[in-house]
Length: 253
Image (cartoon, rainbow, N blue to C red; front, side):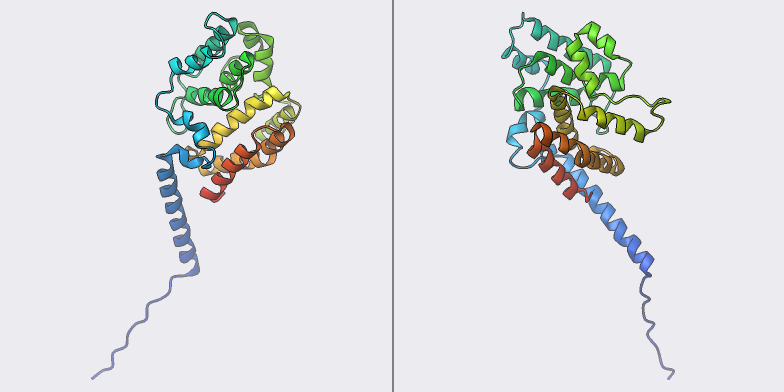
């Protein structure tokens, strides 16, 4: 009888194995991000979760927000009315904008203000108004002069400090804009840095909804520029560091 030979299976090439490994990593990453997106608290260190529980309450709305403000200022007080005007202005200015996760952009502005009011216990009406308005110069047609006219010079200045300049002949590239912006922040007053820290903490704990390249840019910027500011001003160092560490570990950044 003719002899039969068993044909040995060929091993996949190194390139094929690398591609398969990469595919498995991508699938695991997508699955992990999907699961984490179902519970935003998964992006917050355990020690910080109870302190930021208000960010994940379905009860958060304008009525509850101003119940908190009414505990600080009487409703007839000019400071209460200033914050109310800032709230309504920000909501109107960003009414058509959405974040990467599909939520209204205004939810980010309110969340950043709540971090200031509830977590940092801010009692500075101009500063609370500026947190609500912190993206209005950078992302809408509003200008610093218009803010000064509608609110006051202090609010306008605070928002200006945390607003990136536009690309121009003097700043022709995104890299030029970023360098100018971080120089600006290094010279900013402490109250403006408080705005930036509230903004960045909320951005980091909701970072899962963004593309990995954008997440990586945010992580690098935080590590290189925001944490040094936190250390210099002794503001929210552990909060920013610990959330950043979780983001880096979860997404292999």
